[in-house]
Image 1 (spheres, rainbow, N blue to C red):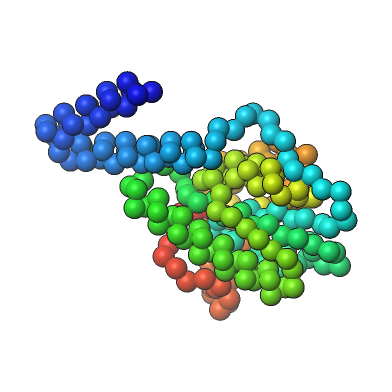
Image 2: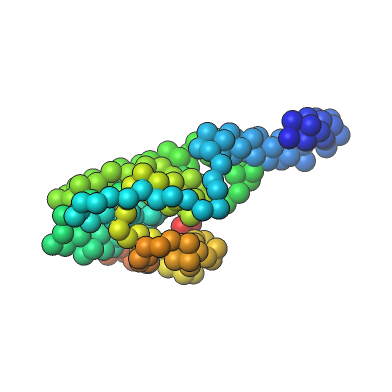
Length: 214
C-alpha cells in the first residue's frame, strides 16, 4: 500500500509539471482517497457479518437512517406513528457523505460532515418535541455500513430508512433499502420524504446549503 501511494504521488508530481490542470485534478482525487482511508481506518474494518447489540427490557427501539431527509416533517410524523403508545427510544443516524470520497476535496468532506451534523441536530430536536428519548450520530458515508455500526451499540427492534422520492434518491438507485432488508434480521420500513413538496407547503424544516441527494 505504501509503494502504491509513493508511485501515485510520483505520477501526480510529474503530471503537475507537464499538465498542471490534470495534475491538480489527480492531486485532489488522491487527497480525497487518503482522507477516506483515514476515516475507514479510524472506524475499523468491517467483517462480512456483524454482531448486533441486544436488550432484554420492554423498551421499543427504533433506528432511523436518513441524510438530507433526516429533518423532514414527514419523517418525524412517521417516527411518531412507530412509537405511538410505546415506551420508545429513537436513535438517528445521518451518513456523512455521498458518492466516492476520491471525488471530493478535503473541504467538501468537512462540509458534508458539518451539514450532516446540522441536519441531525434538527431531527433530534424534532423527535424530542414528540416527547421521545432520542440520540444520534454521524455515520459512515455508506448507509449500510452506517446501519451496521449503529446496530453494534443500539439494540434496535426495527429500522426506518428515509429517502427522497425515487427520481431524486441515490440510495434507492444504489439499492440501499433492499440491501438492508436482505442483510438485517429486523423489520425495515422505507419512507419517502419529499422535501420539495414540504417546502412548497411552507413546512421546510431546515434551510442550509444544498447537499448531495439522498
